[in-house]
Image (cartoon, rainbow, N blue to C red):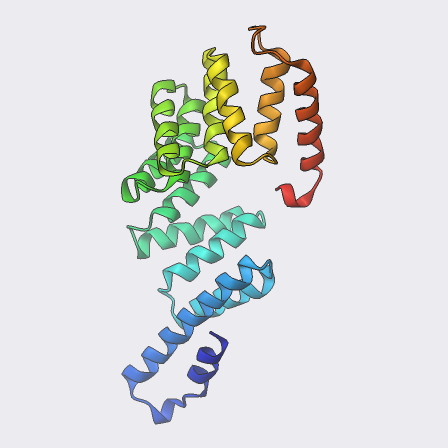
Length: 240
């Protein structure tokens, strides 16, 4: 990608037609976005952000770079900037499901649950296999007290991604609240079989095993071990 960018930068405006110049800018923008994705995946956040900024500077309609920049902004806690980027992405590409799902997460943080649910539903409609959208619908419905709908979405999330520990944990949390303690315990176990170092699953399982009114589910010794493991993981930056 760096070689593509270098070649595009070497093209002199007085040696190319208008169409060739426009194509060169779009190609360089595409390559910068792709390089930014690789750098972001490698943890080179500042370099990735520079690539996304440059990609957008070259092509203001490069919606993938705008979305990717929004993800980095959200991870850095710059929520207003992230929201603006996700909003712009939906304007440029109304069919990109992940932009709606990511914007929904920001609505949840702002306490705008109905708007969050609308975005999660839109994402799930656009991409029925996007497990994070179904999981988001489920969690939001849970917070809104729409338990039947929440359960349907968690089931859909697990149908799309059968090894998604987060969806098992979220469904377990719902089942705990509904009093289906044994089923909730099974979901927490499934989550931990998928990812034994998931702090949310460990924490929720520990709470249920320690406090469950059903003595057939309670297991104080295992609860303590899982609570200690969750606390240990949450002290590590890599657990975030």
